[in-house]
Structure formats: structure tokens, C-alpha cells
Length: 162
Image (cartoon, rainbow, N blue to C red; front, side, top):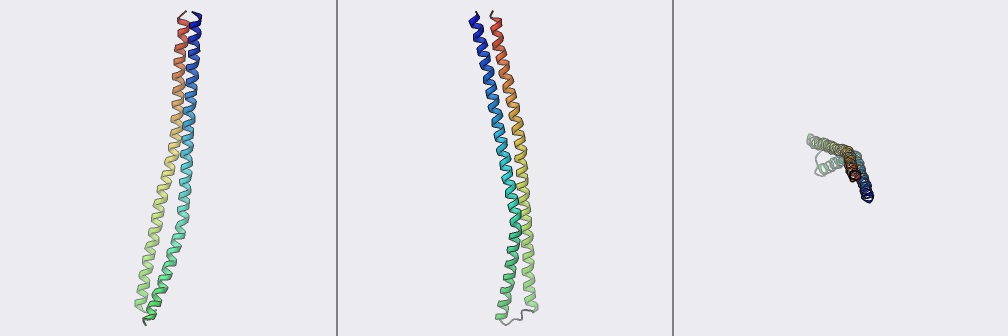
């Protein structure tokens, strides 16, 4: 009879230890996943900053292109014997500048949209990290509770068998 009680008590202890180990593993897994989500969010933040830094370079490059185009236009007009200060030349330059203004506006708008998308993605990952960690804690707690109750049930049989 006593051997049976020890067997139940030992089984109960093993059930509780197993539940504790599983709960610990669940907790570690959720912490790892949350950490990865935060790391990925940081990488996306870096991409966003890089994107915003490059916008200025893209705008500057477009402005240089406009200057080169305007210079080329003047050279072509002069080579053809057209006065570079004529109304025709001024109109061509004006149109090129208008296109450049529209291009710069498009560059800024596209960068803003991309930056907003990256910011939302980053925020989503940080929120996901919080939920992952909370869900992991809840699952670990539930596993520990269930295992503890099973261990109590097994342990109580040791006393009921007397």
C-alpha cells in the first residue's frame, strides 16, 4: 500500500515538473519571438530613415539633370542659330522646369508614402511583439496551472488508496 502511495506521489511530482518545464519553454519561445519582432521593427525603422535620407539625394540629382538639360537645350539652340534668350528658348526652359517641379513633388510624395508604410509596418511588429509576449505568458501560466492540477489529482490518489 505504501509503495503505491509513493508511486502516485512520485508521478505527481514528475507531472508538476513536466508542466513547469513546458511552461518555461513556452515563456522562452514567446520572449524570443517578441524579441525578433522588435528587432525586425528596428530594421524597418532603419530602412525608413535611409529612405528619407535618400530623398534629398534623389531631388538633388533631378535638379542637376534639369541644369544639364537646360544647358544642352541652350547649346542646341545656339548651334542652330536661335537666340538663347528668345521667347521660344524661355518657353522650352520653363516647360523643363515645370516637369522638374512635378518630378520633385512625385519623389517627395512617393517617399512619404513609402515611409508611412514602413512606419506602420514597424508599429505593427512592435504591437505583435507585445501580444506574442502576453500570449506566451498566458499559455505558460495555463500550462503550469493544468499541470499542477493534474499533479494534485494524481497526488490525492495516493491518499485515497490508503
